Length: 214
Image (cartoon, rainbow, N blue to C red):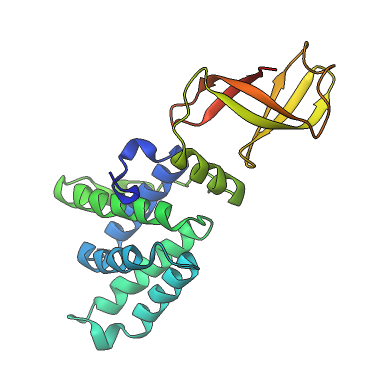
């Protein structure tokens, strides 16, 4: 399975909020889902290239500017304007091109659902998305996608802070976890590289808790 084909389960609650918000916004504006498909197709072609997000938003602005020239109907510019506004409102804080591509893939599905299922969209309040992912959360998500963490797995970690009986570990240079370590806190030193054992995982496969294993 490719990154783009990841299941809906890999979307966080915040990303689901964003997908629903964009879909409902575009349906309210009676936006043609096929025009959104053009934007998704473009994003798919550049998703592995540098500056993917800035290039994508620049492309949306270009569509709005040239809507009359490339459109097939008098409403094409309005469609592009709605798409550009919705993406700018809800996706500006999402720094990962794969995540944006995944969200927009679900937006197109949700738009068809809202239209075809006869959902009374005019009476629906567009949800306010949860805070979008920070740059650090995006980096953590990348690490999680590249790994297959398992309970009982042993990993190297750097001790970056000791406060009383609590130890803060940094794993794979990105993931930071603070754990109660009454036996290890007095032995470990800040800056030391140690081994930790994964105790539990979250539903998305990321590490929930670890314990020192030295």
